[in-house]
Each structure stands twice: as structure tokens, then as C-alpha cells.
Image 1: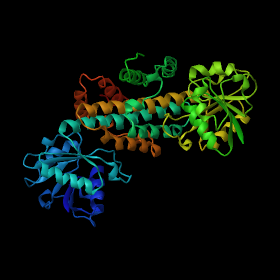
Image 2 (image 1 turned 120 degrees about the horizontal axis):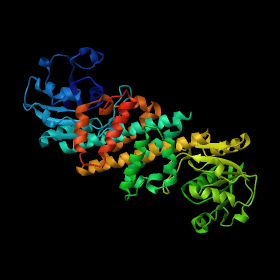
Image 3 (image 1 turned 60 degrees about the vertical axis):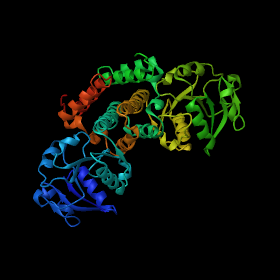
Image 4 (image 1 turned 90 degrees about the vertical axis):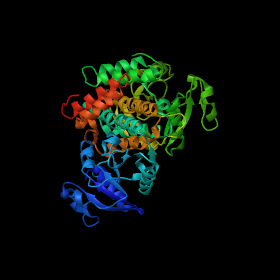
Length: 255
Length: 255
């Protein structure tokens, strides 16, 4: 049995609480948040507090607050030499106060407030300074059904950057496609199966092997048609740059 | 019962043949290709030919050849006033020879040679010059389980352009993420659940509502960290441009 205390009340904190609460081998001893109101709803199933000085004992303290607030909160903890982890992709391990046993428990996934999270689809990136702490966090990830990966700070920051490309930037390409379809009165819905299939494809083959389309074929006629359609559009430079990027990846063809 | 003749032997032609061959209400009267060898494998289940002058009767002739070859092949057909469609997103309806009843039957999906295609995940965009032809093509799409959409030329070309964004360009973002993770010796696999979830999210909420991350939050510290990591990388301008695009979409914040 692994005991935890959760600090914070955002999406990650809330989804972790629910997963820990359901897991057989985990007990949430306490949930802390500065504003008690945000977690008040859960007070019948877990002890809630807004008072750092009354924090209970636990194997792991999980700080799931905004990136900017991690360092300060860790320095305010009224104890030392206990395992304290944050859940951020971009905050350093050493931003946690050095009086603590420091670690990172970074779930690499996008969370919404509403949707239920199945942690078997949430890889957890673990970073610690020693093996014993790593083993505890690995067991904790396993208890909620997650696959865990041992990553160092450099790898974690690369993963966080890569996640911006496959999540935020990809979503913006969806948005641009939405604008393009809307501008001619047609339905974004028509693109949804293609969006899913594109994501499905790279689950089993590499993005390098999965590439198709006018850029990789150097189909100048179609590229010219597309650029003409994008004349005076803010999306034109994005089209040009990503076409050039594909051609550079696949052998240096030029626009 | 709708009878068809297929012309061409690429991915689209082959997947359409398999789907028609399985469908209850469709019969493939013949399959034409210039090189008989490419379709020889199927000769026991369908009549194959390399001779245009011996084409059989059918309700619909489906030209599924490369974009550049559509117009010429249509002009060589030894008959007139029959329904002939092409399957391309970017070829005009009027590129088909005017002696024919012209139409478009454009499956908006990415096909690989190997993977089986479930046509219930393949929207078909239909364009015709009259209602009777539209009804035949709609029934044909329905017979293989596809949802069909009536689109005009302008809408079809917008969909083709939008498909480049959500398929080819998105796949290139996956590729960039692959390079970023590999450069620090970590696994692209860790990103796969996030890739799927990002695609899943926009099945039910709009890309506009689904956006998260440092760009939309205008989290200058993280953006600066990311740009520093991309110093001297060809991916840096793509990061800058897509970050600016997100900020423009969501209220004009500046990098």
C-alpha cells in the first residue's frame, strides 16, 4: 500500500486523486489546496485541508500546481527528507526545495476537466535521484494502470517540447483546416475520420514511413493550386514552411 | 444492384474493388488497367482487361488513376453519355471529357497498400451535374458503408487543401517530435497516447475549444525555454510560426 498526499486542485491533481482513490494499492491520506472551496466537494471521501502545517504523513507528496508555483510551495513544506514530486513537464527537478527527497511524476497526456481519464492511456515519466524513490513512483504509476518511463531532465524537457508539436501545434492545424472548410461552407466533420486515421497510423508505423501527399511527391501542380487558394491568407507561410520541412526530411526537394 | 467498371490499379482502385466486391448491392463487371499484371491476381473473381475497346456496359465507370492521367484516359473511352467519375480531390470535374456524364467520387481518407480499409471510416465527397447521377453515386457510397457528402468543386478543393493540413502536415509534426525525442535518446512511443487523444478530442469538441499549452496561455518562460532548445534547429521557425498562429487565433497575443 502506497500512501499519498495531493497538493493542488487543477486538472492533473483532480484526475490523479480520482485514479488513486479507485486504485487498490493506493491510499490518499489527505488533499491540500490553498482554497479549500475547490476540493470541498470531496471532503466526504478524503480529508481535505488548506493548512500546510497540518499535513499528514505519507510515502509520497504530489505537488500538482501551476509551474510557477511549484518551487515556492515545496519550500513551504513543514518537513524534510520526505519524497516530494511535482507533475510538470517543464519544471526542473532541482526547483524542488533541497531539504526534500525530490522527484518528478509527469503524466504525458492532455487532460480536460470534464472527460474521464483512463490512466492506461497516460504514460508517466519518472525522474528521481535514487533507485528506492524510483521504485515507489513506478509502483504508484502501475497501481493506476499507467505505463511508466524513466527519464532524465533533458529527456523530460525534450518530451515536453515534442508534446507541444504533437498536441498544441497539431490541434492548430486542425483549427486551420476548420477555417478552410468553413470558408467554403463545407463541413469540418468530413475531415474527422482522416484526423483519426492519421493519428492511428503512427501507432504502428513511423511518421517517416507514413508520409504521403503533394509535398513528398513534389507534386508542383497541386502545391501551386494550394498556394493560390491560400493567397492573402495567414496560413500560406505555414503551408510553405511545412511543405519545405517534409521535402527536407525526405531528400531535399525544393518548393 | 449497381454495376461498375473500375479503371486503374493504385491504392484507391484496389480498396474500392475490394469494397464493391464485398457489397451486396454492387457488381464489378470489369477491371481495366494498362498493365494487366497489376490486377492479374484478381482475374478469378473479376474480369480483367487492358483493352479499352472491350470495356463492358456498367452504370458507373470509376477512373482511379493518378491525377495527371485522368483527363487523357477519359478522352480515350470508346463511348459517350455514360456516367464516368474520377476519385481525385484536386482534379476538376470538367477535366473529364465532355462527351461523358461527368462526376466525382472522392474518398477523403489516407490509404495504405497493406492495411484493410473499413469504408465506414471513409467519407465520400460526391459531385455531379445532375440529380439522377448524384443519387446513383450516393447509393454506391452507401452500399460500401460510407457516409457521402454533396460538395461542389470549390468545396472539394478546399477539403483537399484542408486534408493536407490535417494529414500530411500533422504527420510532419509527428516526425519532428520523433526527431526531438530521438535526439535525447528517449522514446517516441511515450507520445503515442497523446497523439491519439489529440485526434480524439476534436471528434467531439472544436479545435478552437480544444487548444491548450504554452502558446494559448502566453507562457513566455516556457516558450523561451523551448526556443532555446531549438536554437540552430530547422524546426525553430515552425515553432515560432505555429505559436504565433495559435496566439492570433486566440486573441492576438504576441511571441
